[in-house]
Image 1 (cartoon, rainbow, N blue to C red):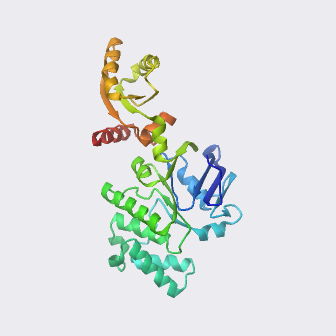
Image 2: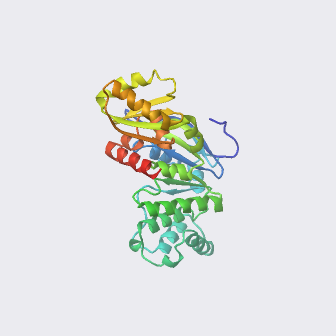
Image 3: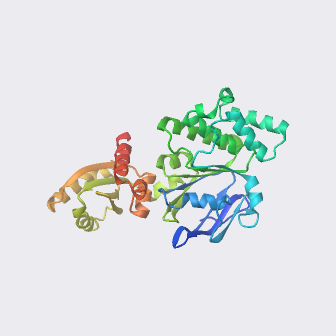
Length: 337
């Protein structure tokens, strides 16, 4: 990891959080530079939200240190809170107020004067493209409109850093993509530093300048999405076979010099190779010689999902506890290629 610099908005050093015997966050260290979109990518329960809660002073760390906007999260909590905005994973708008009233109430909490408050509300409503819905009760907003309003509310006091905890969870794919484009525009226009948690592979790949893979409270890999995928290189051949044959087949594959990496999960064995389309017939013949049945074969370029599998041996959705969702997601991704 790069050395911290004066341009870092967030610095975490061996940050740890325990709940009794459970280690939710296990000594993680990372930094986020000014104007960066930084992602914490991992399954539900990996420790992403707990990390965000410590950085935003909502939870005290068990051990370790961190600074946010130059302020110590343990000693300068009020200064941290004045410097950040937060969009929580769970909805936190008042449905019985209008969009404008939600923003005004938040601005009052931050003690923004009336003249400045009206100016900021108008600015934020324009930024989140809700000017024509400002006087509509929030309970009549769509899910995407509510999410945009929450993001706008987090910006009302002009924070240096905005935390987004699963910003598109529960939204349909079209609305999710719209929110992604809005987040990118926000970052480019306002130069706001953004740190987001997500378990959506495509979200991290599309939005983030750098991504940290979080698994079981630890950071297992950290780099740009491109660099993480480049580390695998070549093509990924994914062979679906019975679990009873996985270990035997993996031992056979380890003797092949052209196989760069091997990982297994669910009913799949994944191989990283060069010129994958030429290697598939050889693999089918090899499996046949050892009476190993192949249910399906897929070929694709490395994705962030493949990188996560490489470091953890599991897919993100499998880690979250639903292997069928994992398999459906992988086949959907292959079909788009």
